[in-house]
Length: 167
Image (cartoon, rainbow, N blue to C red; front, top):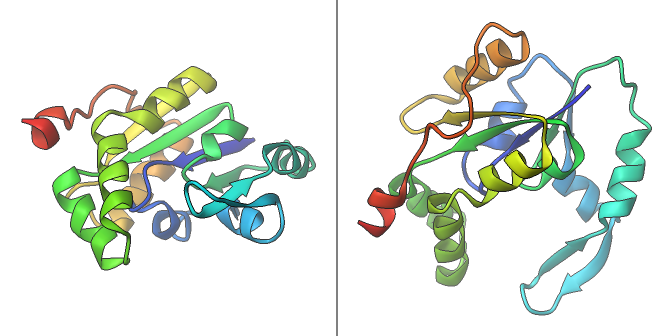
């Protein structure tokens, strides 16, 4: 079984994935490792080869649980756990990572408008949503583990940042 741990860049996916008791696959590392078409001149980032990624992931053992980590990992799983983070916390985090003002704005708008959550709901049979704001990475990892184990359900639609961002 492949479960996507997805969300806007900066919401904690990589850190949380490293704390989970399941093997993880870093989708961005696969893209950087060659599963790409080169640099997208408009966006200045690698353009992922979605077919190559899908072919690679199709070879995984379907009886083992794998965490697919990355902001577009929901394109490759039937179940997504979407990490969310208040734009007021996300902005400074992305700034500290050296993101450009344009890239920060783009990601804050995506978070406020539920872009990744909506994509996950459209693509996946099951979607859970976790507000990571004010929670430690370990707390979030415990919530993810409980969701995967079937001991917790946090359905999509709980988080709304529109007033925080646009209000």
